[in-house]
Amino acid sequence: TDAAQPSAIEPPSAPASRRQSFALPAAFALFVAMILIGVGLGIYDARQKTVVEYQRNQAKLALVLAEQTARAIQVVDLVVKGLCEDVRFAGADTPERFRAWATEPTIAEMVRTRMDHIPQLEAVTLVDVGGNVLNRRGAKANPDVMLHFWTIADDGLYVSEPRRSDSGRDWTIDLARRLSDQDRKSTRLNSSH
Image 1 (cartoon, rainbow, N blue to C red):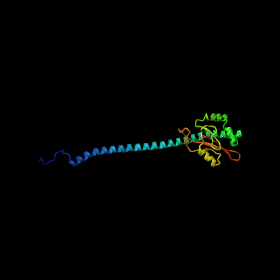
Image 2 (image 1 turned 180 degrees about the vertical axis):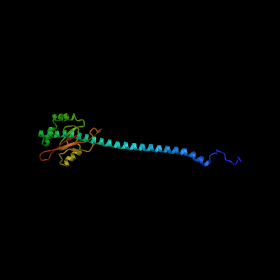
Image 3 (image 1 turned 30 degrees about the vertical axis):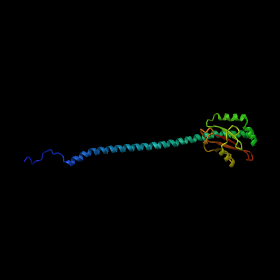
């Protein structure tokens, strides 16, 4: 009769044992996957915030750079306007008088003095209607500036396209104004870059 009675402790059946042995690694794998997904989402969120902050900083920097550029151009334009007023005050109202005025040694010294305190100003050239640079030996007038003033009756500030400087090392732009006689026939250019 003892053989008919089951024992109090029976070994687990094989299928239940396999389910339990897979449950722990599966739970661990799910836990690791959840951690990796959380870390990935955290990294993505941090990246997005960094990109937004970078774009915001770039926009601020662009605004500051634009404002600084505008002020630098205004300073150079004031020098050019001042020279235009000097030409008018001196009565250099014909091409011949302008050439005589622009080639005086005192004018070269005056131009140099005005340039000394403006670091963004590389050179000031006084150019006659024929495109001849009068105050700097070996300098050449920018053909784009000359073409602009020969074709358009413009007394405003002209800002050229960026180009290599005469030295070839740096980039530069030309800022120029046109001076005309009373009949608006002969022009003289005052160019800065």
